[in-house]
Length: 367
Image 1 (tube, rainbow, N blue to C red):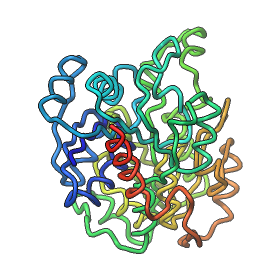
Image 2: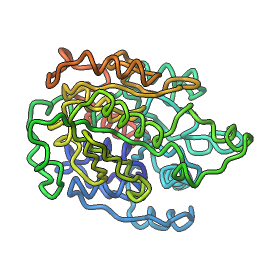
Image 3: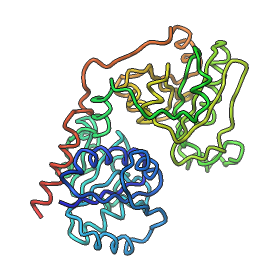
Image 4: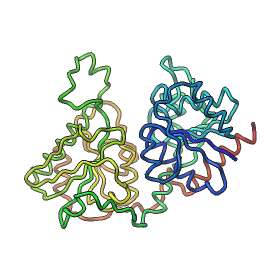
């Protein structure tokens, strides 16, 4: 069997990587990558074809025709015109089965509809990480006969290997040598604003269009630093920025007691293994850190609208919508300590990658 994987987002890519790594001895995979997916595949050492800059469906159709895959397996493509969406459209035209992987617990319908709300890029089957995601996707308007629960290949792997120490030590990073006995806080940044705050001059109307959650990564990083400084905690903060972010947009925030390092390319498992505390907003990586037994919190000061932090929604980590409540919690903690999960979560079911491949195989048999 030949499977073509397509991804442009880091989350989707990491799930696809787990499937490819587990089945590459049995199945021939060709991996098309763009955007944040490229970094994920580079970290994995798997071969891939860079399709950054490919925005034409006909051009992608030519690529797919030349590869003659039996099926297309893609991550979620929430952006209009994403490679994932184009791949599904091409697969439909070429009568190739298509399967999509959902790696988040929101924006279900948004992944597959055009500007008018019409499903123009819905795969033949959509793999959900758990029953909660399936039910929410159904409520959001996805057809029931296109949904199945497989588990998340990424989180299944994280849980299975949670007691295995990462051997990929990024020795070039200064914070490793500087840590000593100091508290190591990992801040998982996200791209919420499209530009640094000092460059943004939005009108009230533009702010409404932006649909802000009530905070942005720049404000949260500053508040985190101020909180640590106010508590006189001698610590190192390692800010892990999003793969699509530019490091130069995030100035260093050193204070009297806080040494701040901003990194983008680093092995997350190793970083979490070293961390005493992981702070984020709504990133799916907070779930990964929680599975690994690190104390984890979601800091969303001034949260407006629905909470999109899955780890907090699942009651696996606390959510702080004010800096004061976060500071009070931090003051009550005694680091370091572990916070291990006692049972495997449904979304991290061991057979997740096998389930995804089974879905693909069933579709190819029908065709």
